[in-house]
Image (cartoon, rainbow, N blue to C red; front, side, top):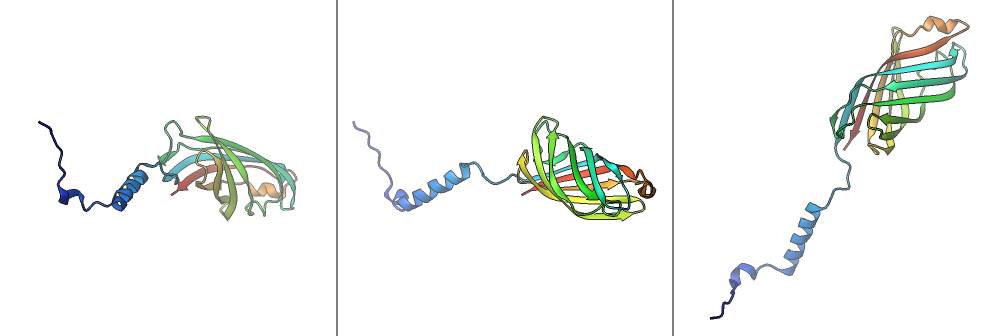
Length: 188
């Protein structure tokens, strides 16, 4: 006896090659890895920023050297890789500045060194500077241009507390500033 397989003519006769092609394409797209950036919402609060100026800032604009360092607070949020929890960064530069222009618009590049050894390069622009009761608040924004989180947007808010603005009237000038700093990393 020979077995035969018979297909029911009404069940499969309505499936066209075009439908099969469309179904295969859809399944392929569903299993293909995404090339879009993953959702990223990371905050690094309670960090510190320290800067020094040489020569010290006075009320007269002059060429100065500046050096600074930052240590982030513990980072948390969506999209943070396992084992990544904080970063440090240092920066140096030269600019013409005074106590009056301490909050002037600035831009540059900064490299974050994450606690796991990964690196991110950030291109920042100072977008807001405010002053109240001896405190200066700077808001900086810009993209991560390379490394970990490339393409993400970064916002930093640094508050320089209790600046000795009286030092601006002395020959030595204002030689340092420090305070808390918060970072926010976002990407859609």
